[in-house]
Length: 575
Image 1 (cartoon, helix red, strand yellow):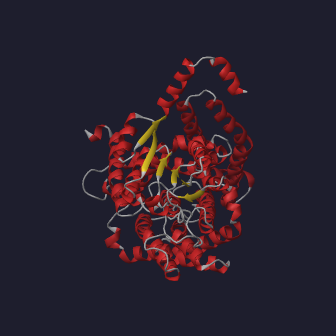
Image 2: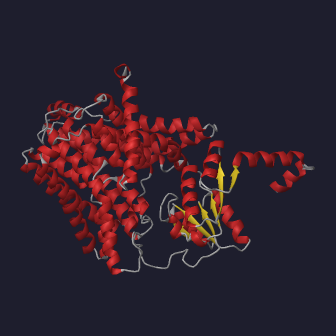
Image 3: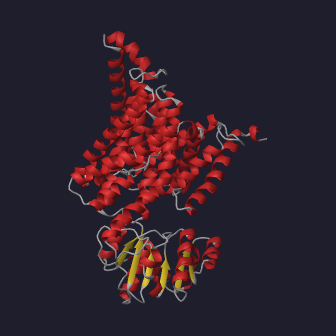
């Protein structure tokens, strides 16, 4: 029966296993990405049991790549890069060159040729966006100088890899590839007409197509896409808005590949980058996040399906050398570069640990390399095996950097991440205070009302910009995630009077409520809910009072209807 519905079976098996193994990885304090990759291994052709349709999985992975790159473009910020460009640009390029050279040397030593060695080295040189950002968020480093350098470094790496994805297909023949690409075929035909060498004609043709596509996106796309989003948003239909965002992302990616011959990844990246200029970009990102996450998981599952576990037994030395390059050589180069720019040891250690893993772009390069006939399947296996092992090792490296810093700062508690500077914590001196989680549209109004009553308010938000706004309004503020296990201690909830949860996610709010009750059984907890199921979940988690938005709106409107002089009152309020 499974073979009658291979698409459904592949999606269900991939998502169910990824969910279970992702949860297991989280419980072991490992990135969920490791669980997704292992799920792919289990349903792949190299392990016993059910085998998913690899062709369908690869097509689902293509959608995952498009949405991943769309998300990268949507969050791409030239400002973030410009703030740290003095170290991020030369540092990232220097580290890519060094890691590529070391990786290519290993590839050449294994007999893969120039092209295989180059792709292998490039794949080992770039870090995973997902793993790096999650590690920085968990350690509250995003808003620090170290975090900004790491993010800027990552942006440069991503841009270099996007360029590599554009140039590798037309250069495949020169590098020893066996799979002819359309651009190469067209370039060969063009070379006779222009009297140029086939390689030069291919590069010129590819460059012309890429420049044409980029010009079209920057000149026409920057005007059309934001206006199209604004028009669809004006209909008031959230469903149509989400559909429009996905149609733009997938349509631009598909059109760029078939009309201009550039990669789906590049088209999706530019679609996201252009859409980021729209004032509706935040809504576009939030509305499409569930679908992007789901297909990103399927992408990692499909990558895991390509991994042959026998590589762990048949080529243990080559795999050990691959991991050593990712975790050792690349990190040492990054550490040396950061130190040479005059930054302190802790900053250098953080950057080195952040980059000691590989991920999305490495997988994309590995698949591209094998499709071009440049990278042998054993090279792909080494890249996938190196990714899995480096992702597993990465949390230990971060703990090691914390331990090294703690030796110089013994006053920090065991297990606590090392702050950028060791100033007194924002909540250290607070007692009998109100902890307000979420400083968005609702939270900021609640904080203002509490401040007018003279109470002490500690604001917690996962966005550094919102925390800066809270501090400017006179509140103490901490950057943190609601699901962070250390948050109750950091917020000094043991001495707090009230916990107010204004975040929209009932799951995250419930997790924090349970931990707050453990830290302070006497604390009073207030929350918000948008549905009946959320109310029950929050009450079960220890929340004492819950406000439902729909009920409060209905009550307010009913009171206005029953009140005398409603028309004059409304006009007075408007004035």
